[in-house]
Image (cartoon, rainbow, N blue to C red; front, side):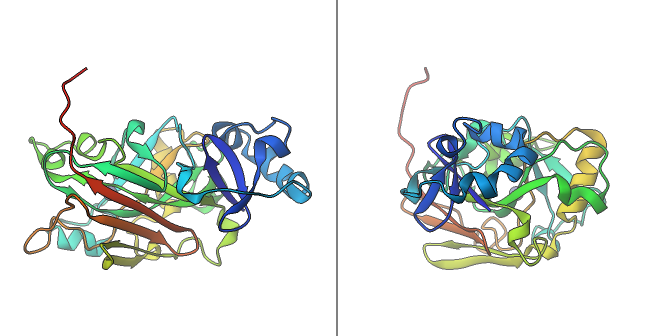
Length: 286
Ligand code: ZN
């Protein structure tokens, strides 16, 4: 099953530009995305019969918003691919390295990013949305708590990310539109192996990242075990699972995103998201 967020309303996506308005088909029972995740098991049971004879409508994919627009928590994992740890000249962590992206950085699949001052870099990531409350869950049953997977970018302004001693990651990764996800949420049963998917990114058509999610240091099951040992993961919560090698900051010379650049990121079996970068507009503070 593929779920899209069309202007805040959940849609079951059935084609490139076709789908079923879930709010309409369920007579308001599943009216928005948070409700879908909150009632994930009931929703999954409802889908086959509830959408069987529903009206299919066409939609414009460029208006797809974040599949989980209002999570209670957002987790992001640093240094979770060995080749990225190596290119960064760091050591593979013994425990997952966790930070957050604030929800105000969220955006949909297709968006324009206003460049803040500094050095903005790309990080394609597989993003997990939680479908069932998870507390002290073991890796062996962790996938039962996953609603689905989507494509994300963990856009990062490297100056702010690494300023300070010790550095704090979250703010430099939370400018407006720095956390786009989409285009849709795909449930794990849609994949032959949801733990082994190709992902990558292109800048102006040139491929800069390419890897497989099976190369993660801590796989999705282990991440859920590890995060839920401390916190409770709630339905709709979002986990950015880390980026593979190929980011701009470690290149010689370093390469960053500038005005006019276009970034495309994909995960096999899910689709792609697209960001265009524009210069900052001078404004006075409110
Ligand atoms: Zn990242």
